[in-house]
Amino acid sequence: MPDASESDATVARWRAAAESGDVDAAVTCLSPSIVLSSPLTDQFRLEGTDQLRDFLTEAFKAVEHIRFHTQTGQDDTYALVYRAHVAGQPFEEAQLLRLDEEARISEITLFGRPMPALTALMTTLGPALARQQGRRGLATLLRVSAAPIHAMVTSGDRSVVPRTQPREP
Image (cartoon, rainbow, N blue to C red; front, side):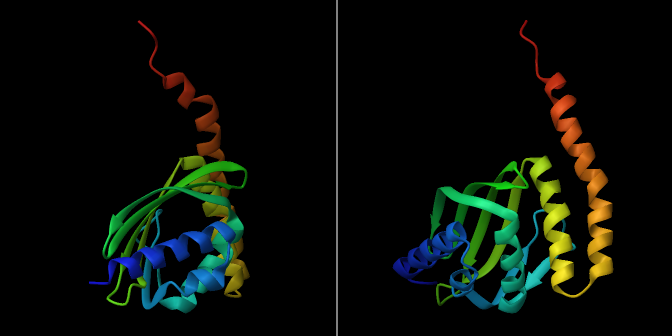
């Protein structure tokens, strides 16, 4: 189990790197065997600092104005929550962090809300990662296939969901 002060220091550096969009500083917090699990699907996992560097480069462009507001945890497990914006949509994400024996982040599991921001993230981050890998056709396919989902979710959130609000008796 890592030393508590080392764990706290790693988490503080991680938060500062995310809030400033500093990919290099964020990567120094990571274990070489880092694994990141997507909030959208079990079919998307990133492994190793090279994949995380590429992901963070695009994520810090897509997710703007990160400001952490909650942190809890100790030893080798922490939960962080921040507010930000994705394509102009308000976004909130929780991160479950697990640290290795050397107080480096070895596992990140992401949870995000609300749905319009998640689908906006799908339309921006997925295609950006594909383009970064030189897979332009896949980038186009991801953007085109996510766009109708985003349009339906955003429209429903604006026009249908408010109608489901409970009425006063």
